[in-house]
Image (cartoon, rainbow, N blue to C red):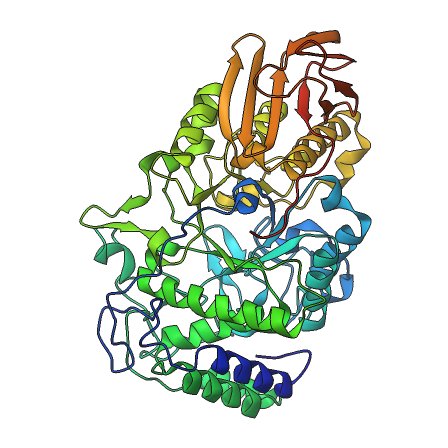
Length: 579
């Protein structure tokens, strides 16, 4: 991997990691699991132990998801790298957003004001250079999901030094960074991007979704050659990477790193283990806090167990080498996109002929596809009570979900016309579980871009100009209040939900000593409500909506605000240190 600190840092890191697991991977409870046994995998049927208890921080976290290319352009000089051009279908080329743009917004305090706990960026490693030419028009890999080289940052986004700066800047503000990883396909073949060798990937057998095999051992779509993640057979490096790295003057470094990795782990040089090495290098080198894993159900679940194991070792190594730069002692976090998975199904995903509990294979959380459709037809209490029951004492006890209402590829996103922005904010930010803000949710960025086709409609550039409008600033202020409330009190997302009143709608959330109360549709001006069972007599309580504080007197809280909403909790921010 191209690094900011050179090969010597990698050698030192590899030595530390080797010392940490000197007995090899074969006897580790989280050892690699594959469909075919190999000499280095004596325990091929083992799984990664599921989390014994969900981390309240991650079950309450507010995660901000962006496509860097569409978020903020911090350096116009890198807008079209690798000879890319601007003659594409509408919203299907690079628009200039980059890592410098994200850094600028970090420094401005934009994410602090939103109460963001973690940034999730779509993949920033090098993408295919050419464009596809389909019915939607010429399309470049602006979205980041057509990888060409997993070991370096795409020049349209910046470089490795900027990525390091971004992560350090985020960490300095208490914000974690999740990288989006793709391990099941390379990018489409173009005039500039040839097919990888046959021993690396398949270019036929498009998935027909007929059970487990018809979902996993196949190409996701007909233009995405599929990595042979089921294989245990050693393979040589793809010739296009060998020639590319030689031209860039880093072939010997990359080969030395691979030699050290395979010597330490004992894994065969099969495609999936190269992938694991390349992906976890981002963690070992830069201190990445977690992965959002793309297209999880299209890869053998055992591969994800290996990825989680190696990523966890890599983060522990980075923290050991960088004690002054780490946020805390939290373990590596991994959330997966299992398309179609919903919290109300419990832990298992049903392929039809096989059920898989992905939490058994290294995932701390899964993206919850249930909530977007449910939010359109159900009220808050129906959603909140059901989710709380599942997460607290129900089938989802000990694991987590990441809720979302809009995304980059869900054409059924909630309120694409942005007619219900306040409802969206309340339903997402107050739902039990973690919350994913998709860039522009907080500004009601339209998801129906005129002239765009397919998922490009969901990926318009960030509508910063709309902040000149009063209504946009009001929407942003609402998201900021809700985000600050969540960030101050883990009970909002990780606590047990209890409805206290139907009209006006009042509920509480409780997580050990952290207690909060939310009251909606209250009268404007003077208002009072019972604090019984939530806040003790004499307790000082802050309304995070108005900023006003009051004490419980005679079991009652009284506020005089111009708003109809109360977000109540202790003025003291909940401690977020690792357990």
